Length: 242
Image 1 (tube, helix red, strand yellow):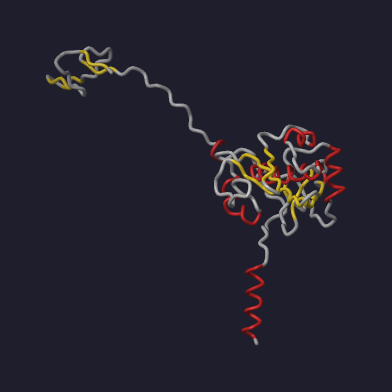
Image 2 (image 1 turned 30 degrees about the horizontal axis):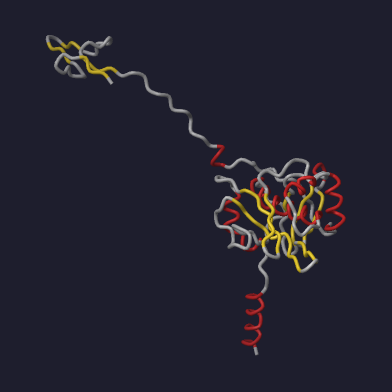
């Protein structure tokens, strides 16, 4: 009987959906720029409510233009994409958590492992019906109350929308997706600059002209008694220089 019970539990664990679990707000802004960017674009796709969205139309929901953001209709699904910097701190996070977050290296591609863009499916299309990614939204707490955070069901972490939405868009998103059980949320305090970009080597100046020869302006010969010692031997009396 115990063996059967264990087998049932094991099967449930194997086939249960995997969800990323972590702190409420990750403190690295690089990660928010990618994950929060994907959720923000997904929310914009939902507000647009169009089976063939265009990135130029989605821009109107944001305070600033989403940098290099993409949206594509592939077969019966809508995908959003954001760039991942070559030295971004988000790269290590994505390699570990992309499968659980559903983030891929291309629309309908494999889980992200290192591409220049990260992609997330924002909607499925069936006939005239559009089933959008199920989001949860919440405003920040205290001084961060003007910031909106997004996540999906089954996740513990919240992601700051990137870039920021307009006030009208925030109200529309909260009206559609506001979570009543959201924890206290504050904007991440971590640096938005990769450690690889913040630590740069000092410039190396070209060395001055070096001179070696018997007619040097600084004679390094040393006289000890009747013997003259020269640290750099004179070669053929010529003036050799580099």
